[in-house]
Image (tube, rainbow, N blue to C red; front, side, top):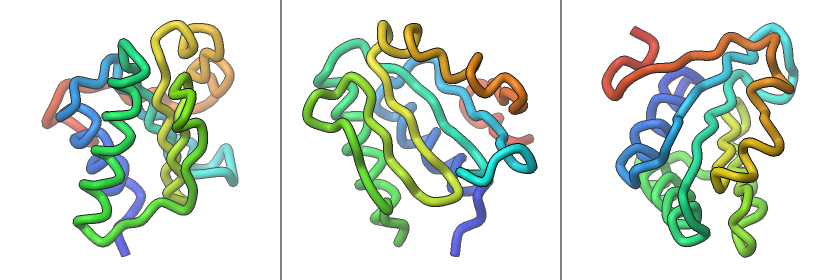
Length: 120
């Protein structure tokens, strides 16, 4: 079984391969029973948001990791991929600003990074 940190890193890598924007990780360990990490990112269009979600699912499945559920795919304004200890939120830019999960979960440590610098 993949640990939560490694899983979050795999999600980020896959999202970035589809040019996801403003990718951040919220470290929820110790403050939430929902998940250890939220990975939050944005896409510019419905098609890009769907492409990011599909690519994450494909890449993780190839590594033996299947999502527990997927929500919001058809409308693609906010797609949620639940991997248990890691929950992925893929937004259209305007919806991300509206829901502002970073503010809602402001007690969580916000991990920002450039590619290849996750958890280093």
